[in-house]
Length: 251
Ligand code: PGA
Image 1: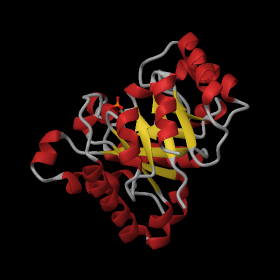
Image 2 (image 1 turned 120 degrees about the vertical axis):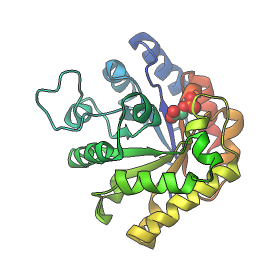
Image 3 (image 1 turned 90 degrees about the vertical axis):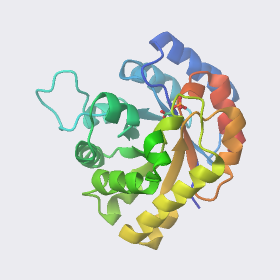
Image 4 (image 1 turned 90 degrees about the horizontal axis):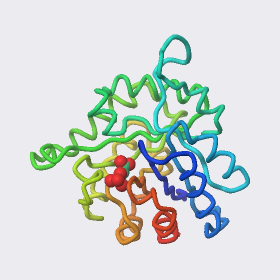
């Protein structure tokens, strides 16, 4: 049984005061449930404020990125150990915005993944194709290339430190979302790839979540798909009520 994940990715949004308010509002309604892992990924500056408020709740904390080195002279970077220290259990790696605007390669993402594993963080590794690639029929090839590169050093025993997020680039922040069937097709492809490389036991338990313009109206049909184990939510996670509705529709 794969426990669902509903994760909110705030990206470069939310000041400390907004973040604190968001948590307080969400906690008024959030059911105490072991049925779903609720994760929130605030910007680094709001991690401490969010951690303070979620301490007694079941909400889990994620960072949005880490540097590829464990520590040292890397001005502006935040390390895996620092995220752990701030209370994070998860980190988002390889988001398409980081691939696009910060030229992150699969090789770099793999280095970050190793560092995250070494420091006890669970990595949410994002993969997904552009519209041109989808239209050219290359979706599976692109996703496979990102998995092969991003997970290059991973051995079977580390898969419990991994969540894979399928996020078609054309659906992120655009209001376009993959249909449940389109998403299911790629999720199945990812699970089959895990099966081929790591075996059936691993592919049965790894959680593969979907992201790209998820809203309360679209979340339930996505979650109903066999290989969709959760959602990575950007825009609709910025308001506590729509994020709560998405959590609720997945229970
Ligand atoms: P979106 O972002 O829901 O705003 O499309 C999702 C993501 O980038 O993780």
